[in-house]
Each structure stands twice: as C-alpha cells, then as structure tokens.
Image (tube, rainbow, N blue to C red; front, top):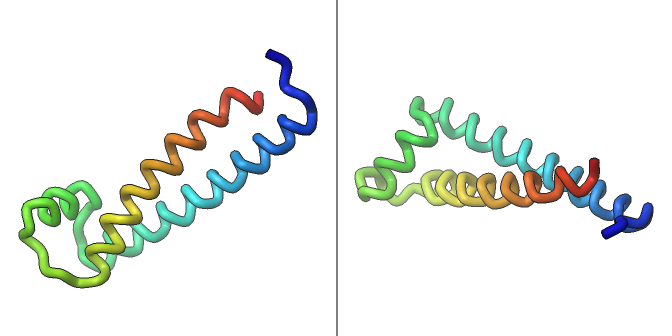
Length: 83
C-alpha cells in the first residue's frame, strides 16, 4: 500500500498530537509522584486495593495513567507509518 503525501502529512500531525499529549500526561504523573512522594506503580497498587482516600488527585492520577497508556499505544502504532 502506498501512502500519499497528504495521508503521510495527516499521520505526521496525528503523531505530533500524540507526542504532545504523551508528554503532557508524563508531566502530570511526575507532578503527582513528587506531591505524594510515591511512584505511579506504588500509587496504582495502593489505589486499586482501596488503601488510599477518595481525593480528586487520586482519581486524576489513575485517569492520567490510563490515558498515558492509551496515547502511548496510539503513538507506537503511528510511528512506523510515518517513516
């Protein structure tokens, strides 16, 4: 399958959006890790066991982790298409 210049340009824009979004969520996770002095992995283990409270930050942290995972997968899928 041949990818036209127009399609390649669209894929590159989507890849750039993914990159920007991935970086955003990484920064959000780092800020929460610093604020609560624990890694995201430690947070997830405690959060999923119900060992933490119901603070808004904790739900945001959980969502940011899930969204980072999703956007990272999309970025990885796009990468070979734009080479």
